[in-house]
Amino acid sequence: MTPRPAFGKALLLAGLLALLAGCAPHRPATQEQNPVQQAVAAPPVASAPALAPYRELNLASLEQRVPVLTYHGIIASRTQGDAVWFDCTVAEFEAQMQFLRDQGANVVTLEQLQRHLTLGEKLPDKSIVLTFDDSYQGVYDYVAPVLARFGYPYAVFVHTDYVGSQKGRPKMSWDELRELDRSGLVTIGSHSRSHPADMGLLTQTQQDDELQGSKRVLEQELGHPVPFISYPNGKADAATFGRVKAAGYTLGFMEEWGPVQQSPGILALNRYIHLQLPRAWAENYGPVETAPEVGNPAPRGLDVLPSSATLLLGTGPLMTRQTVAAGIPLTLSSGGSLSGQLAGRLLSSSDFTPDAGRPGSGQPGSGQPDPGKNDLRLWITSHAAEGEPLGPYQAQGGAFVPETDPARLTLVQGRPFVVWNSERLAFLPFVPGMMNDDAQLSALLPGLKGAFVAGAWLVQGGQAMSSADILNTGSSDLRTLRRRVFLGVSAAGQPMLGVSKVPVTARQLALAAAGAGAQDAVLVY
Image (cartoon, rainbow, N blue to C red; front, top):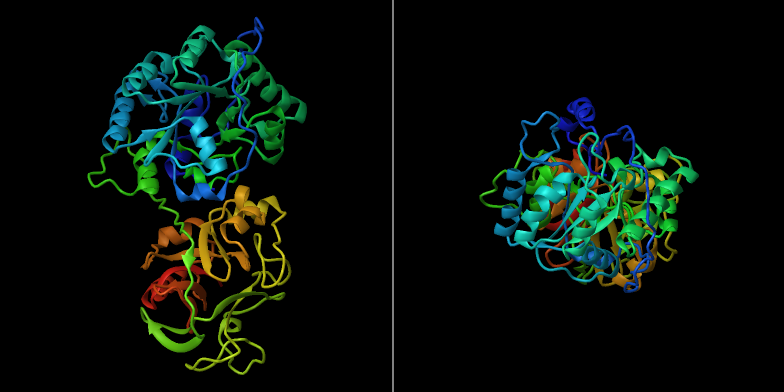
């Protein structure tokens, strides 16, 4: 998960006290008080085209990155008494929309996003999604005219018990919501009934009431199905996702800040808060040369997570040599056929070095090819004395083994997932919702031979990753000095296994891997 920025923690108390109605990003909030009593007329739900069935994330969606922005209050001026840090003024909002226009952005709908994420359908270049939580009156008064002028579609998530409420910040009425719904630009989704502080803390009965009740009221008032949801305060857990699916929702948003493709599942999608628009654009589409800060300054310090297409593996004999790269002495093996072997015990870096007198190592000990022993052996191991490797894996000749512990799945989310067959190798940011079974992996790489979750990204495009990049998804010991091992691919497509002969940090290993000619590389040990 994307870490929270430090400045947000400092403003937690102020944000909660100032916000009289609605949700604060990443923060628990009390339920709203005095909800509007429902008096639903219950017209029949209008006939509509068949909804897309529930489908999980599709690996094909990794070919594109798509940022999703979330807004809350759109206000006239930051000087108004109830303004909080995550509000957006009309002037700031107009500037952000102009920024998107200047960058050639294509704003797409939730339906387009869903089809892209679940079916792999290609979106226009530089696509982005705009969402608004809490159905504040500012959406009708300020957002709608601006986005009508730009022609940009957007989504509004409604907590139904407060429709038309004038307590705290006013909320839109049903008439106004129906007007937006008919405009052709707006998709309306659920934001629960009463905006609980944390859906995951409710009983199953309470969750069903929030999820089903909101959906039922929206569909009665709007006259068509409502399959999308945004969780209040971005809070939900695995049990909630089960209730969401049972209620008939097919896409859901959290408030974890990062690329949507790095989300754990279709019901737990990432979004960026609007303050992070420059960062969101840079992470998904590259830096803007004249990178203006749009609206308030965006938080800094979180860098792009890499991903790669499948890399074509070359053929050639296995060779091992001693070398020095970036001042780090390495034992470097390259070529041969990549072979992932399950260790079954706690290993050290020396276990990854070539023969050195150990029988059956499968790797030669000199700079000469070893006919008949052409496997570049990669140990798939755990750093604990006992237990399975962290995350899903597939060892040579074995079946794919999914990770069954939700906490371990969360721990490895975003780390490099290494998968290969006889011809291709891919380093992918691990996404639990699409990579914890081999169905999609086998479609991507028929004849899957091996898979495991590596420790951190080291090299991409021949360039060593920065310390911030490496630490963004890696384990806590990446600054520790110890002997380390990388797996890489050379410019010629040769797999490479490098073992440092001296203790190094992960950053030093990244520099050594790039210096040794790795075009892409990850930390193995």
